[in-house]
Length: 316
Image 1 (cartoon, rainbow, N blue to C red):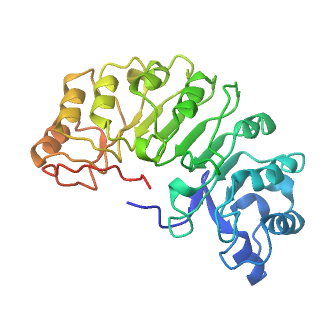
Image 2 (cartoon, rainbow, N blue to C red; image 1 turned 180 degrees about the vertical axis):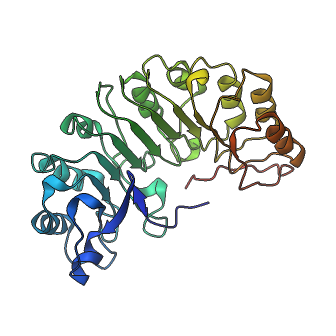
């Protein structure tokens, strides 16, 4: 699986591409859409120019959701090129509640090549932010800037998702050390070691305990070759009884992991259990359906359970 399309909806709003709407001369009301700002590969202007046009064309105070597309025209550049421009307009973006950093498809840039930066200032600059999505981490090359986060407290954040083919251990640990009293939804695409995912199972302990996440109702620990081991931890995790949604999708999830879930604490209270992209046998899939009749169960994307080469959905 690869990310082949831009987001069509974000934060409950339809996404409007600013460039397209601008060219058509048909800009919708600023508050009724999630604005996507991004360059095309053949753009002669830079992101700073496009961002300036956006701020001049709409009322920034009415913008509730922003989707950052490609901030580079050709060769990937660090997010540090674009992020300071967004942060610098914070006094004008007083209504901003949701931010998606790097709505970039694989045709524009492979997820492992998306060069991020320290995203801590996002939390510090937008204290009223309710949703943040961060895509990419970049591999640990000497000439690239990597995704980084410093532990902090944020009072209003309700949804946080890191999308990556390899999430650095330092970021996983930093998220686990943050205080997010309002966070309801947390999703981590953990990825693989070959693309920078050097986290360990021990790094997941704060999410499984839920001690720093008192409002959490949906947990996603996804996109891992260790999905069975994660399932074993989830099967006895203290956070599970208060969840309504659980996602162990996108990884090398097999009958072994499913058996651990079925033999562990009850899951019948869940509203949703997302296991899409898996290596389950038909028999185990039926066992799950029979055991969880009232749960919305996603078993789509079945891979061959007999395949010895098992891969995650998102890596390179």
